[in-house]
Length: 203
Image 1 (cartoon, rainbow, N blue to C red):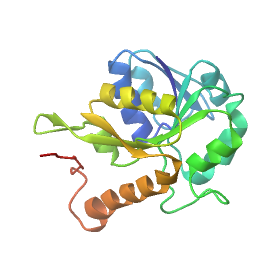
Image 2 (image 1 turned 90 degrees about the horizontal axis):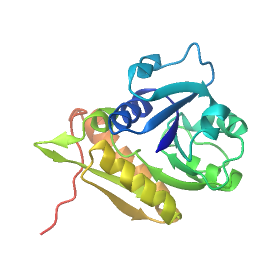
Image 3 (image 1 turned 30 degrees about the vertical axis):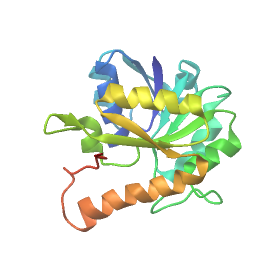
């Protein structure tokens, strides 16, 4: 599928790289096509760079991986996203896009897109390589759009995650962001290191 990625830092770059390897066409949406973070991503297969608006017009799926407070500037440049799927990979754990609690809530209020929260619950190292002891770790998602969740689930599997578990509807988006904060707490604040991940096990 054609995927626009807005936010070409660690998380966006890791997903762009792995999705490119799976045959997806990656359209990087940036402020300045001649000077942007992650310019080395253009070495990946089927990856091109465009202005944000032009990249959006070329894709039905948009991943947003930016600082939460930057969403207002980005929304102004998205153009018409009616019917498109937007994957919110941000975390408002340090900064919030006031007056909204999360970027997800901002997007559902200000656009006609189908929005899902996903790819926010672990570090970029686990996005780039989600395999531990020969098995993929889990990804998680939340939101009201079943179509958007279906797309997120497929892209999680394409990235190498073993599953993409549903946290629930939009009322669970904040909980999923706190789950991300739990990973940050263990990996960074408590010093366990970034090469750790969550996996659901069952009897």
